Each structure stands twice: as C-alpha cells, then as structure tokens.
Image (cartoon, rainbow, N blue to C red; front, side):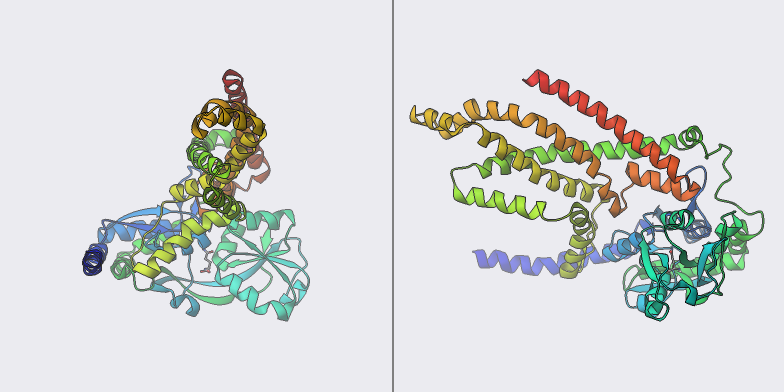
Length: 482
Ligand code: GLN
C-alpha cells in the first residue's frame, strides 16, 4: 500500500511541476527589482516616488509591450539576490553587463554605457590611484566597481569599505569616514551636477554596457519584450526624451521639493506619510512576531522543565541553535537561502514574502529567549512545592497549572516586557532583507536628501517614544495581572 502511494506521488509530481512551469512562462504581472539610490537611473523624488531613467524606461516599455509590472527598490545588491532567489523576475538598476554576470543572468540589449570612476571630495589631494595607498575607498556591494577595486587592491594598497547602498556610501565620503568612492561615472557626474562638493580626478575605466537582466534561463519573454519595447521607444524618440529629462541641463533633479528638507520640521512635513507607514510595518512586525514567539517560547519552555528527557533535549537544541545564529543571518537564510535551496531541488521558484520571512526570523529569535524566560520562571518556584503537591496525589499537569505557573508567571512578566522591547528594536535588523520598516524608510529618505543627522535623530525619537509608551502600557498590564 505504502509503495503504491509513493509510486503515485512519483508519477504525479513531474506532471504537477510541468503544469506549473507552463503557467509560469507568461505572467500576469512581473516583479522588477531595482536600486534604491542610484541617480539619475533610479532615485526618490521629493514626493517619495522612485523616478529616474530606469524607472521611466521600464514603465514605458511595459506600456509599449502591454505587460504589467510591480517595481521594488531594495538596493542593488538585494535586487540582484532577489532575482537570483526568484523573488523578482527582472532587474533594472544601471546594471553593467559583465562576463561574470553572464553566467547567472540573461541580459537585454544595452541602453547606456558606463565607466567606473573614482570620486573624492573637492578638497582632496588624491589625484591618481597611487595616491590611494593606505586610504579607504568605499564601494557598493555586488557592483562592477567593487570587482574593479578588489582586482587592483594589491597593486595600489588601499583599503576597501563595502556599503549596502549608495546613500550611506556618499554620506561616509562627505563626513570623511572614507577617502574616496568608486561608482559609475554618470552617477558621480550627476551628483556633482546636483551640487555635491565632489570631483573625479582620474579618468574612468569601462565596465560594460548597461542593460536589463533576468535570471539565466528564466522569463525569456521578458527580455524579448524589453528589447522590442526599447527598439520602439528609440524609434519614436521617447527614449531620447527620457534621457533628456534627467541628463539635459536643467533636468529633473533629486531636490525639486517645495518644502525645505534641511529642518526637522520640513523633514517631518514632507515625509510623515512614509514614516508612519514604516512605523506601521515596524509595529506589525514586532507585535505579530512577539505573539507567535510567546506561543512557541512557552511550548519550548515547558518542554525544558518536563520530566521527559527527550522533550528537554528538543528544547535545548532549539534554544541553542536559534540563540547561536545572529538574527540577520537567520533572516537572510529564510529570505534568500531557503527559496534558493528549494529551487535547486524542485526547479521551481518559490519566493517568500519579505514581511513573512522577517516575521518568521523575529519569531524564532524571540521564542528562544522566551523559552529561557519560561524555564527560569518555573525553576524559580521552589521544587518543594511540586514535590508536596505530587505527594498529595495531584497530577503533574494540574500542579503545573494550579500551583507552579501562577507563581512563575509573576516572576516572568518583567522579563517578557523586556523581551518585547528587544523584539521591537530587533525589527531594524531585518531591514537587511529589504523590508521597508521604520529604519529602512529613514535610510531611503536620507538617500534622497543627505540629512542623516536630523533624520536619524527623528528615527531615534520615534523609537524612543514608541518603546516608552509600550513599556508604560505593559507595566500597567503587569500590575493588573499581579
Ligand atoms: N553599473 C554598476 C554595476 O552593474 C553599478 C550598478 C548599481 O550600483 N546600481 O555593477
């Protein structure tokens, strides 16, 4: 009987997967991933919308070819990972066509050509690569500029500092934390044209054509549509219009804001909607994951004081494993690692939503600590009580429920409140998978206006107020329960 079922499954599986693969070839909507700050190709305007050559181009092509798109802007490195993990169908992010990338991506026809070039502060004395000896050069992770820097590092003897986004890299250059940056020439030139006090002392090095890409072998129709659309836009002059919009003098800028974003008030006025939505995500993440963590944590906590050795062992392994893995790695593992693993086995892309992945990571993480809080609380109740109750013939379960847990809960409560505060702060860590919670929202805003001092101060106050309010509330609840 068992064998028959197995045989059936074996036959059915390929049929099912064939069916899915077919339906996949033309999608009702394509998810396109992009950079978060890479002006003039993609950047946020003062209305907090993503614009730029790439954004206009992909929208115009989708319109021309009649397909639906949804654009996400997690940053270059994360966008690349998203396409490789199947979370996105294509990437448009001023991406260079390099030989190494051709092994993992299929590229469209090119729509631009870029060099990589060194950028330094206007006042800097660096004038050649030789001058970089013992200096620190910043670069964005996963970029062609990074490859260039790594390849030439031993020759010139500089240090490399890697950034996940352009905004923090340029911020670090402005504050003097790094001595130079390596980035695409049009991007550096654009920021200089926007008034950034930078210069490019050395001529650039070609890194290849700029093109749209999909994961190698997947969504071939997307590349075809892109190429056809691009050709149409070139023929009817619309492509040139898009370029002119951002590159001609007096073109669209990153700071056309009517509100002055150099004051805290202006920043709040112009970004409150975005900040509130980020705050909403942060709260949802913290509350949902903490609720799940309490359930899992209590289960494992009870296991850890159980009279059965196997249950104690299971609990111990869970706590050790989760506590032993940094939260950021856990989140990355769930968001990128597991879909990648499933795909390598089944051949099917099975992306996981970033919010879900973040919630799972936070839940597991907090559950491990809560399990320990529960264990500690129960063990703090003198053993004599359990023994006395059992000797009166009362069952283990009943003693737990009626005698031990009511006392233990009181001991645990302050620790729960503490753990919740930690969980709320930990939400900032899962922003690493591109989740736009409060911290990421702030970073995106800074990417546009470079107001890092004021913006981080605003974020700090946001968290401070929320955490203070929530702890007050929790203390009140705690009192009531006592
Ligand atoms: N053109 C560079 C690359 O492809 C940088 C792209 C980017 O940072 N968005 O590596």
